[in-house]
Length: 246
Image (tube, one colour):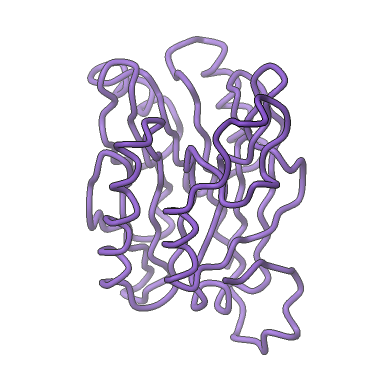
């Protein structure tokens, strides 16, 4: 079975052009689950968008004005339990026929470093509760390595040490991808702000999975598509795709 999930920082979901673009993406790639970040609408406007999205169920952390917001929409091909809501993430348990498929955390890290710093503590607490495959994806609003930035000021923000510390202390895997390296760009500055990471159990269970960086349009952020192909556990040396381990 293949579960396809799309993560996208929409930077606004109210316009007709975004709705057309969203429909085209969904029709083309047919994700079973979509995570939208920074929709910049809430309440009845959000209800209306989700109702017309074509997905069976949804859950969201509301945007506050033009700030924040995380929407998760999914087809009823599996069961989704909302485990925790947070202003910077939604933590989910995904199962089918009472069998765990994966834990998933949809991330929209605050662009404010003083607020974002609390995310790593909260994710460390979440990690204590996870047993089995765990996937985390979305807009982390910072980079893990200095090489994930191009252009801009040479003295500008580089890799986040708090992110690095959390990543390595929890033995996470940075899933490599197909497509352009940088997921966000504005002017002459490009960064890999959006990414998909996982724990060792997820990497082994979904060894045949792929991550695609899709073309960028409407938003400054590229959509990320994860095709989670369930395969029997394999020896790490025989995996068909490379990943960067801690």
